[in-house]
Structures are given as C-alpha cells and as structure tokens.
Image 1 (spheres, rainbow, N blue to C red):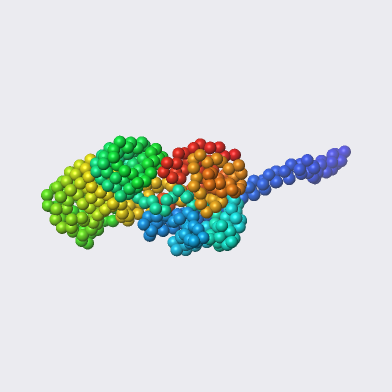
Image 2 (image 1 turned 135 degrees about the vertical axis):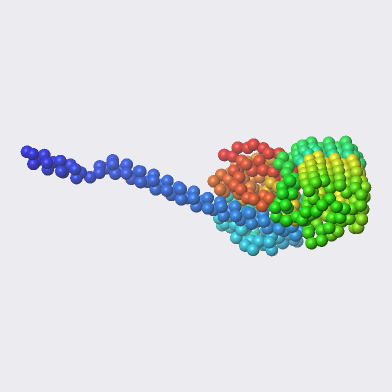
Length: 449
C-alpha cells in the first residue's frame, strides 16, 4: 500500500496545465504584448512629433532670416498664377537647405493631391487647377495669414503707458503693453496697439489700425539687452568726458549718468551703455556730426529738455520724457512710461543686431508662424468653431472659419506650432484658441471632442 500511494502522488505531480489555466496564461501574455506594442507605438509617435517640431523650427528660422533680408517683412502666405514664386513655400527655399524635407511632417507625408488632412499632406495641386501655381509643392504645414508681410517693429515700444501729448510725427507704429493716451497734435502713420486701453482725445491722425486690450504684449527687456551686451561684446569703459569716441570700440560703457549739457563731441558710430540716467539738455550734439549714428542703452530714464538729433535707437529701462525736440531715425524701446509733451519726429528703421527684433520679429514674440495644417495658410479667429471632424479638418477651406485648417488630430490630440521667437511646441487642439494669432486676438475657451 505505501508503494501505491507513492506512485499516485508521483503521477499527480506530473499533471499538466488545465485548459482554464492555459487560457489565463494566454490572456496575460496577450495583455503584456499589447502593452509592449502600445508603448512602442507611442514611443515611435513621440519620435515623429520631435521630428515635426524640428521641421517647424527650421521653417521659423528660415522665415526670420528671410525677414532680416527683406526689410523685416515675413514671406507671403499666398501666391497667384501671375506670381507663382510669391508664396512662403518657394520664397523660403534660398534660406532652407533642406526645404523639401522640412515641409513634410512624418505623420502626414503622403500627398493628398488636394487639401490635406490629419494624416495626409496637401498637394501637389494639378497645374491646370486654380492653385496650379503651387505645383509641385507637397507640404504638411500652413502659415499664419495674419502675419502682415509689411509689418515691422514699432517706432515706440513701451511697457508702461504711452502718452502722445506733444507734436511728434511717428513714421511707424506706437505700441504699449499698458495703455496709449493721445492728447496731442502729432501724427501716427502706422498702428496703435495696447495691452490696455487706447484713449484718443487729441488731434492726431492715425494711418493704421487702433487695437486695445491685446494679450501677450512683450517689448524687449532693456535690462536684459544691457546685460547681454556687457557679457558678450566687451564694452570699453569711458569717463564722463565731453567726447564719445567709437573709433576701435563699437561698444562703450559709461558708469553713472550721461548729461549732454555743454559741449559734446561724437566721433564714429556705435552703442553707448549707460548705467544711470540720460539727459539731453541744450543742443545734442553740440560739436561734429549734427545727427550722429549711435544707439543708447540706459538702465535709468531718458529726459529731453533741449534739441536732440540721433540716427539710432534709444533703449531705457526707466521712463522717457520729451519736453523739447527729439528727431530720431530709429526707434524707442522704453521699460517704463513714455511721455511726449514736446515735438519732433521718429522715422522707424531696422533695429541694431543686438535687438531681438533685428531678425524680423516684431513686438509680439509669441505669434505663430507655421503649424500643422491641411492647407498652405489660414487666418484663425477666436470666434471660429471647432471642426466636426478633427481627422479631416475643414475640407471646404471656409474663408469665414479658418481655425478648422489647423485643428486636426495629427499628434495625439494636438498639433505642432512654431513662433516668431524661433521656438516650436506641441499645442493641444483646444489650446489653438489660446494662442496670440494676431494683435487683438482674444483667447477663447473651447471643447474639442
């Protein structure tokens, strides 16, 4: 009997898996395989997103380089049969050595031969069609049509209130991150744009548009510019003498205040950094070139009580007060309040190389340039509706509802966007209504299914 029990136990120990146990094992293996494949699929998609972001950064760099060589104007968003090369895909070719590859998102590189979708690139269009001038272009991205090719930097860009209370002629735009108040008798040939209110109680004719309450206003930070020049350009120290000589030293630095009263001579051209305040009293300059070529970057305020003539830019981290006459071929960047109660003119010209706007960017450093899109361009409005199908976007290219060209589910419920500061990021579809597409675009909260 003992031997029989022993044999029985040995037989039971060799028993195989039951059908139920095998099914459980197979289910577990299937789940694990599914998780691994899902993880690999997501990893591959993240890689494609990174490649797409790289494409958009390259396109933004090309657009800014184009603008730097074209009087700060961005390329055209649209061409015509009479101007087949006059749109961004072809205008940027000299500035992008791998343009054809950078036009295609890895998640949408298959040509649609028409309007694209979340998974297809737009084009190539038949040469006989209304858009034949785009042929043979195939692209996955579209340009923000709100970027005005004729726009440039402002004549006055201020963080604080801009008070136009004098008789200055602004051959350019006036922009403030705060408010703009006109109580004078001057003239503005460009736009007036403010992060706050715009009050027009004066007699100043305005050649452009007036746009208050613009979000995301961001003029260049003067203190940051000052520190960058000190760190990178080795400015040569000067005393408070009566001669400013740029010969052999394009960057000079003066520790203390810069008071121009009395006899003052400017030799050569360059940039003067001032750690204190600047005061123009009397005739500036009193000796030498009547209109010197010179930029001034000051950590304090700038006050004008006399006659000041300058070819260049004035950057002041503090306030700017004109109670005399300022005649400037350049522009002003003011960290505080701009208060003009005098007269003169400001003729806008391209800013110097150290200004972040010199590469073609204007006052709005966060405007989109390019984004994943089903067409070559789009002009979104905050009132645009969410497209019914985010897999296709708005295939009708409705001119009154153009957010539908960008609102496509290309990257896990998001699209990639590049901006005027050269950056690129992944934006959830609902976040498209939160971007600063143009001055005056009011962010809106939407729900994307």
